[in-house]
Image 1 (cartoon, helix red, strand yellow):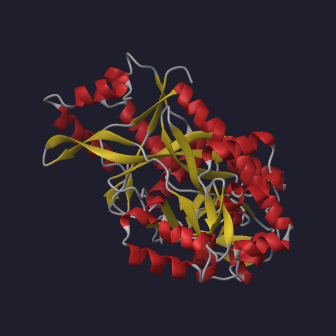
Image 2 (spheres, one colour):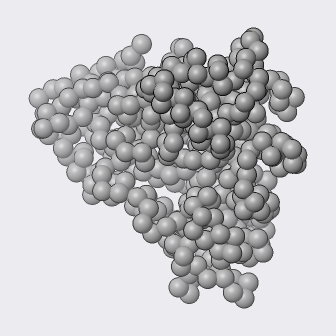
Image 3 (cartoon, helix red, strand yellow):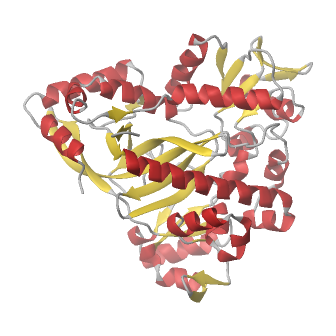
Length: 447
């Protein structure tokens, strides 16, 4: 059912001056540097609205799933046999063994979910590697709040957005103090200089420096570690906001990276810690889904898993459970292609994902065969919501259906606050994969 605020918003966008207002909004996005590479992060002219009671339901469920992921991560760290099922390389084993110095390595994360109001809520992945886009979302919220159509509808429907950039800084400092940091830290935002999220780093840098925290954006290749200090061009670093993906750091720099050595020596605090790399592995969702691991979780977590985690298994020859059936996994997967998704366990950004219903039987069989040679998961297809969003096309307002996901942000391994929202014309929703759009979320009502 379409929310009244959405109906009213769309009706107001369809009026004669909608196109002119839309062009002005897009220009303000450009001026605010809300670009992913060379394109705007948001290509539509309406935010996503969620009722306060639905927001509470989503974030409460997310916190329970997060707690279950923390428990299975702890179990994997303690049990070498269980860890073997994750399929880590020796360098990955070595880097997750580095103690971050604080309880939860995934101080900031994002649970990716599909939410169909009054029908279903399914969490399908966990991005524990300091996910991108948080600052973009907050600035988009500010721009949309000042948009004339939004100003009009918010007079009738109270709406709320969230101070995500402040939460990022609070989370970094909480981890830094737990690690043992005392003085006001110098902060480095660390990622490759060519990444398409560079403008987001500028927004975060401005936020940190505005409240008195010296901050630099640093490429891992420009780091130097000597005399017990990690530096970049003379800037001594106390706290690293790690945006570089661990697998890419290992691939380019290896374990002898100045960053890795400094973290291992406790010369610098890094958030998120390298141990978050384990939580990124999609095979952990197989440990959530498979009843043989149910003893790892609390009763509340088991109930949340049953309600919100789709059936997921690591691809391998052998038998497993599907609902109340005992099945041979690979023949079952071949026969149920249209109800399954195939994913590499350690990739991100939609890389390597195969949607069975968009694949021929021969292509699916080949993909399954390849998956048996690596670490992949099969996951049950879940309902994906669609809504009509206005956009500006050839100087006119056009409405078109977009698939969307709703991705709660997680904080310090314990709670969920705020959400990212992504749109796409395809069921594979990922802005970095191309063609997608981010939009801000507003909670409607008394949150």
